Image: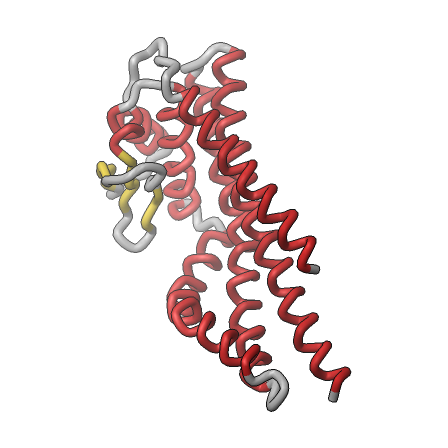
Length: 225
């Protein structure tokens, strides 16, 4: 199991670096329409009848996200002002989440409902697991609790997958409908979003592998008893 975790870790690094490399390349390819990411986001929301959503510029790199609580599409500076294929793809993806919210997409609401519990779980989980491993030869209860908490975070990782894939599907459907890009440019936008989605897939698999590793430790202590 240690080997599996290590292999997934290496794959995760590779996919993350590939995504960043591709996004960097596509973020230098200027759109024929000269639409900025913010303008594209505004257009996508308006054309889908979505009102009451603010489009904000947020600091940082790859900090783009949709906040269903504040109803804001938050775009990093490069995406907000960028007039590139990369900026268009990222902005449209985040608006895809806004569409999910407006259309009551079940998995988005399920994931959002998990967030408060996840925040509390994430703070205590590492300490509980560490304590469980230290005390494993005395009692397995702390580790069992830690595994329960970690199972919740693993579930959240897998719930995230359909949400992200669906947001990209909505983004690409709108981009295709608007005819912003020719076929080759469209394929580049799709490629950027596919590699972005793969980072979530690897994160979910890494979480599952880590969960199995903890279960192996727990079962090993049971057999010794």
